[in-house]
Image 1 (cartoon, rainbow, N blue to C red):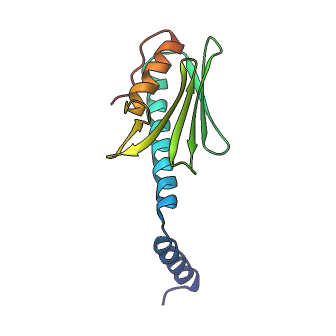
Image 2 (cartoon, one colour):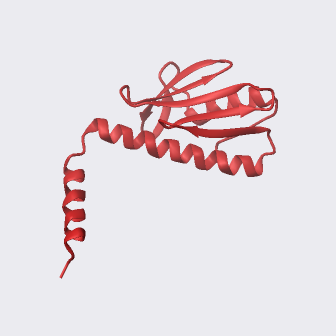
Length: 130
């Protein structure tokens, strides 16, 4: 027979799935975007030779630091369902649209803006498109 812990887990999973709401979905989308950004950054760190380091802070804040001491902060704003990017050149907000994250002001792709900000602060071209 099925152990009680497996039955409990199954019931718990069913409850979680049935309890999904848009706010939870947004948080999940933000979580998956953050993971994909982290994955791309890890690949970049290995491949691009640009001098930056990054750290995931509590609450899912992603902090990039460059050799010149400047930083870029990527933060998910769960209540707004947005991702916020703070860089030397300014602050940018992104919301999900058609499977991408687009700027609330200009519709620009998250990775395009992040690449541009990183290039500016690293002093060399960085591309996160891939």
